[in-house]
Image (cartoon, rainbow, N blue to C red; front, side, top):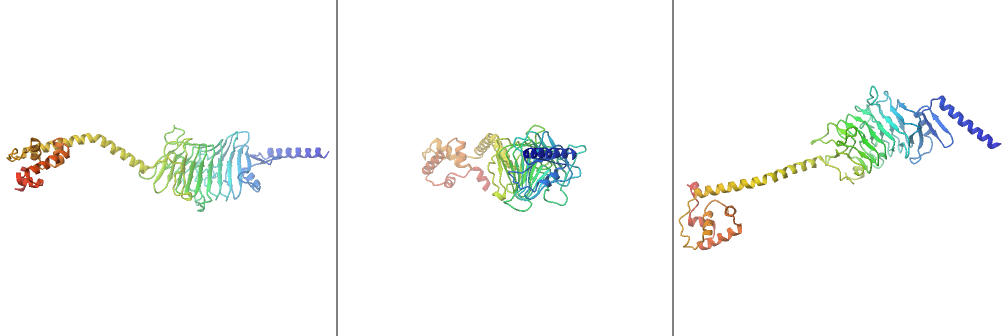
Length: 447
């Protein structure tokens, strides 16, 4: 009898809860394993359920039952751990036109976490900035900001962040001053307690930014770990269509795809204006550091391209698996090197021909100007070959030029020269000039 009463009581409880859901037009729900609790707003569910003792491994799970428009940011505070999932249909959490100065979702608490989706979630969860609305919503803040010390945003498959347009700086804050998709920045300079975005899956698309770091941006101390998912079709005005960070941000990619400027239209991430000289764009990824000036990828970073950059807090600008990085300064040097090498290859034959022509022309001129002295070569036992060398030694030609003009090696010329000196009983070319006479051109100059 007692068991029967308990079962009846439980049935009444569940019936009352379901009626409450119908009466309040519930938009979200939560279950504790026994009862289902319904709430009219996401903020109400968050405020009611955040006092539960939870952790990042076992967060409070809130199910989104229908589309929701947020007129104020959903704030995840100190020590709060929330997971948002879908029910039995695709649902959208959308920015309201009255909420353009703040993120749609703001993970700002110390050691707080937000999980979007979970492994095996069947239906799609969309977080939408409203840029595709009619009229479009243009905001001063990113779609999601993560800036609490040790705070984390974790994103799974069947989650899409989309259609946020950031048109300028938010008034009066520096906590989420850049980026238009996911913005990461630890507010204080806490190098070992950084905010982090872990992308295990899902999609970031259709994001627009007036500056840089469109889909994902780190400004200050922060981490972005990409294990899966897709970043596509985002547009930055300056740099970093897919991802951007400064020297203090850390980045590691072990999976997923970040499309670049070489991808088909509708997939590519684009940076329109670039930065620096020479221009750097980082259509897929850009790291803005001072030495070297930039590290960037303009082309698609594929599923198997493992990139990593560890900023100053974790090292000293170390690119772990960064063999795919490029540097515009080095790229310019390589381009100039290729141009110079090509020019040398093309010009070398022409240069050799020109030198030979000039040498022959000079040799003929010297032969014309030079009047060989009347010497009894036979008297000194000078051979015909030594005679030719002797006559050229009395000109302005160097020994190397003589060897080229006679097509003889330098050592052969030197050998015959020494024989000449021995036969004429002299020690140097100067003594040869004294004994046999200076060349005609030098005589003319001295006169």
